[in-house]
Amino acid sequence: MSMQETAYVRTEMLPEREPPSLNTGPIGWIRANLFPNWFSSLLTLASLFIIYKLLAAFIPWAFGGVWNASSLKECREILQGVDAACWAVIHERFWQLMYGFYPDNLYWRPNLALVMLIVALVPVLFEGAPRKLLAVTIATPFIGPWLLWGGTIWTPVAAALGFVVGYIVYKLIAGALSDLAGLVLGPLAAVLWWILLAGRFSDLMAGILPLGLQPVESRKFGGFMLAVTLGITGIAASFPLGIILALGRQSHLVIVKTLSVGFIEFIRGVPLITLLFVAQVMLAYFLPRGTQFDIILRVMIMITLFSAAYMAEVIRGGLAALPKGQYEAADALGLNYWQAQRLIIMPQALKIAIPGIVSTFIGLFKDTTLVSIIGLADPLGWVKLIQADAAWNGIVWELYGFVAFVFFIVCFSMSRYSMYLERKLETGHK
Image 1 (cartoon, rainbow, N blue to C red):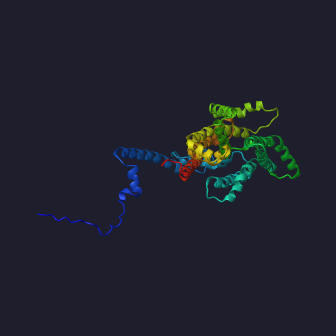
Image 2 (cartoon, rainbow, N blue to C red; image 1 turned 90 degrees about the horizontal axis):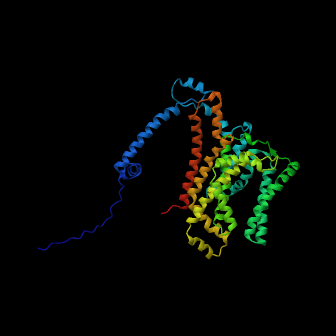
Image 3 (cartoon, one colour; image 1 turned 60 degrees about the vertical axis):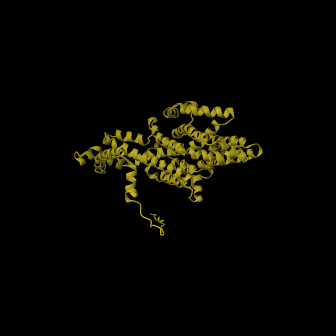
């Protein structure tokens, strides 16, 4: 008996169906990340229990606190034995935690400087920002300090002219001799201008056309204003210096390499607090008698040098991770050393080093709290000053919690921007 075989051919397409609801959306994410197996499920349940216990104690303490009181004693009288926070200390001392002893009628100046800083960072951090904002980016390093310290307007003008002098000398020397000679003599001319002529130029112009703001002494700086000032200055100055040191460490010139390696290894081998003590006490012994060197400026220099040494090693790691073929490609295109570094090598090395660079920035910003040890009233310094007041003696968690929260917001923002930049530049391996 023969069997008849019938071939089956579908003549219509099946309609698309929605994926299973348990495998998509929030439920799918929970199943895939929190409950993929029995061990992960146990860890998830244990973590949820710990979070619940912490929040059950923290939320009533934080949200049931007192915001209006003139002392810790008054807070306790209002709470009547209830275990809750005394946020009144933040309400009473908020402006001191923000600005220190800075005159309250001049708060508009650091506020304006902060707004300028944010606007100046926009075209640097985000590609789609209007290019016109670069004018603010160029002006902020000069106008910002003038707003904070005050004085004659000709001081930031003289500082800006130093870069103009350095650029002119660089172009003249590079055209007549070589790029290397221009890169050496250009910055040297700028430094000589700042040391020898900038002060005289500023005094001369102030006598002719006196324009300026009310001066504010550095000892009145404090709180988060001081921390942001030190952090931003250290980050902005240590990054280019770190690039120079990283290139110097890989240089074939023996003197340049030796100086770069010696500087990096010495700075990395010394704690930051030691350098801060040197800036506070010992540096005066190496200066001419009667020389007045602002303490905040000294601290800025030491923080910048300290961060630059670590930044150099991070960037050197990016350079070392770059394939050798990139250097060969630059040579094949006929580019000189500086063109190759600017157009091919350094952009790729910096992309590789983004996580390390941002980690160094975050560490630098947090390290600004060490200046409280040498007597500067940063946020932690102000916490100690407030605790020394008889009205608030004994209060701890509220002050340190507020300072930690502000630092967390700033550092978390830098971390998230780092992740955004990595995704945008596709630095990860696929």
